[in-house]
Each structure stands twice: as structure tokens, then as C-alpha cells.
Image 1 (cartoon, rainbow, N blue to C red):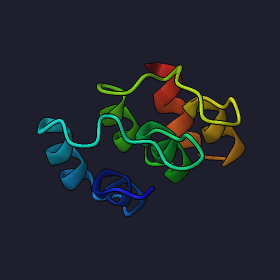
Image 2: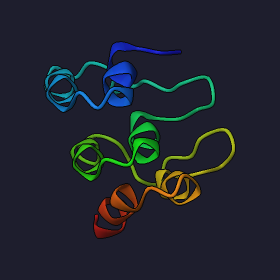
Image 3: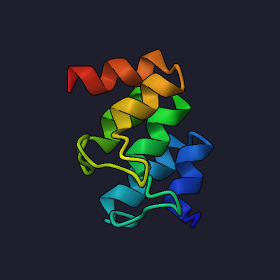
Image 4: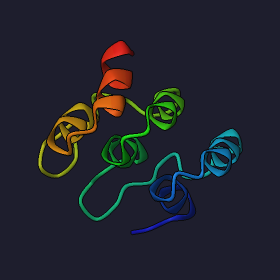
Length: 88
């Protein structure tokens, strides 16, 4: 489902994402497709958001389709997020 953290990621509200992560809010979040917040950030394509989330979420996590955040960034054509994930 959609949570405060996933909504903040989808709306690219980096300051809200940072505050939620500092308070450990949403660290177990996954949507109905099994996407973690890092998957969602890879989908939005904002590298700074992906780098921030890499501190708390594994780049190796897989959604229900078996995709990692790297796969999602490639599928969605998000070069910025892709670079952040590769640089990690």
C-alpha cells in the first residue's frame, strides 16, 4: 500500500524522506508489487533520492517480478537513478 514514505518518494519530497528515515519510519515498507522505497526511487529517476535511500535499503532486494532497483531504473529509462545505483 501507499505509506507516508512511499508518497514522499513518489512526490520527490527529499526533506520529508530524510526526516522519515531519520526517525526509522517506513523501513519495512513495500507496495503491493513488492517494491521497496528504493525501487520507487529508481522509478522516479532522482539520483540524490536513490543515494539517500541506499543507506537504509538493499540494492539487491527484489520485488514480486524478481526485479532489483537497478532493473527498475533500466526498465524505466532513469539514467540518474541507474548511475546512483551503479556507483553504490
